[in-house]
Image (cartoon, rainbow, N blue to C red; front, side, top):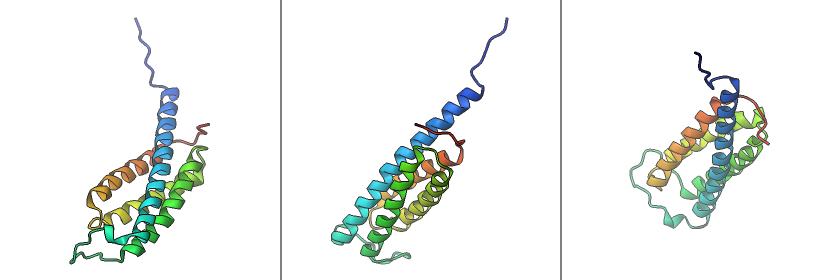
Length: 137
């Protein structure tokens, strides 16, 4: 008596497609969130609380521009990931890594949100690193 298992190529393709879809959605959403965070920091930098003796102290308006630019690129790369383009996957990994670093460096200005984003970008990087090329649509 033999049993069949569903561990073949079809299952790995479904998993890879699911991870790419996850990364595409999350990178697009986080790109828009970074855009809003950037606009918020540029327009009203007084809402962010800064610690006085932080090693990586920068102007909040400067952080706003950094988040705005990275957010725009992240949203565009996330949208391009729906077609599973290789350039979008590589760009997504690089942008997610830069956003992760910028979230770490802006911890004192918005700590809880920065920690959530660091975890999110880590998952996006992981999902983009383990997928195979395949169109989602």
